Length: 525
Image (tube, rainbow, N blue to C red; front, side, top):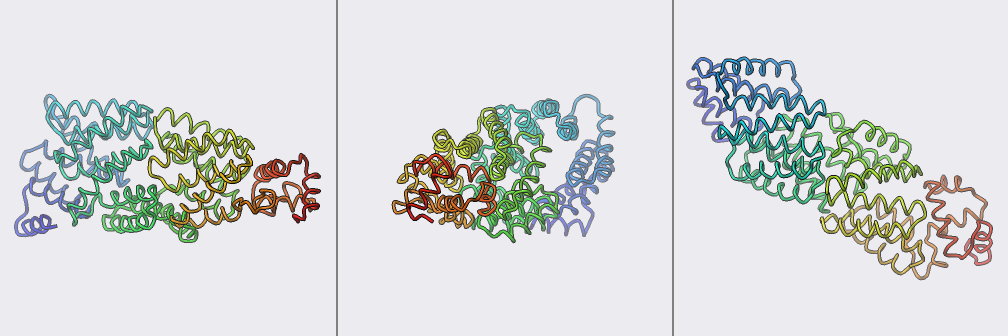
């Protein structure tokens, strides 16, 4: 802020030369005045031309073009990048600007989904930066190459490039704007690679960088979004909500609607988990208005509201139109959950299979846990609780290792249901009690309500039946079909069938007629 004030005052008294105009532009950018940044950088371009310094003019035109493209203003962006290209054509031999001008081509190949070609172009630019000793170029294109390799499926190589770029950023070797771009880009790529450990570590370093510059607005919104996501995973939901609100405010101040949309989506996620469904809906809708795809959160919200058809349609559409592996990894767990709720076991099985393949390909513990949870949920829905147990115990173990208490509790709830289905009521109660305690601590109201509706088995429950199983048994004795029971209890027919299988096992009967007779003779109605 002080630098911007001093440079602005000096420029008011006497127009600054090109170098100082660039410094003024950078200071404007860092305090969130992006429009001023672009206007001053355009002045720097003309000042460099007048001073017969075409390379500096080229660099200024490049940054104007790249930032306009990032904002979606493609026509003026093309014009400025065209100016930069014409200046580059006048240069004899290789210069570092040849590397910078490869970045728009990298973006073009990324937009086409040609990740391998984009990675190769980024590698060429990195080599130019290394030959000319330009750390900004090397780190900027290195983090782009890392992202492309991850999206191509070369996870280990991609993460290595990201780590190298982050080391340069953390050591203070880079200019302020490139430092922020690399920090945010690398953390986003770690999340796309489903590597919460790396994302958590680099977010802590980015937070320190932002905290050291309290007047900085640029990048702080994105930093707060990353922090909110890490806090949500770690079960710090009130803190995550506060960080999301701060991120939205910084995004507004920094004239960055995309960041505001991301912040609103994160706010919606926390509100959905805590049961504030109306506020979640509002935040999802506003995030969508700002261009942020509201899935899978909005589909899960519809499921929580009892609108299973809308949930299924939304998540199917999102999965079908998403080709990027990292993005699919974020959608598939919700897809499996919703398909199971609607009784589409075939679609749920396909999603679980894909998650398992992705977990192996990405070598990601988070994806491995998500895949194990999906497989266990599917086996349980198929009436195979013994098979489900192994997968669910593995899921709970991994979620616990990555410090994800909500996901751990969800896995333990399913473990409890498996134990109950196998007749081990004591173990079932222990697992369900542990899940309930975690949900209570997190204030996960919908999950607590679901546990209550299921009914935790206790030694005093008649013949080991849960409250929900008693409801099903009474409706069976009343002559209701599975479809009628599903409608009455707002559950799927497959869930009804699973309850019936558990009831038959616990009562030692093999038919609906025998179960009804048992219920009448033992006064269970």
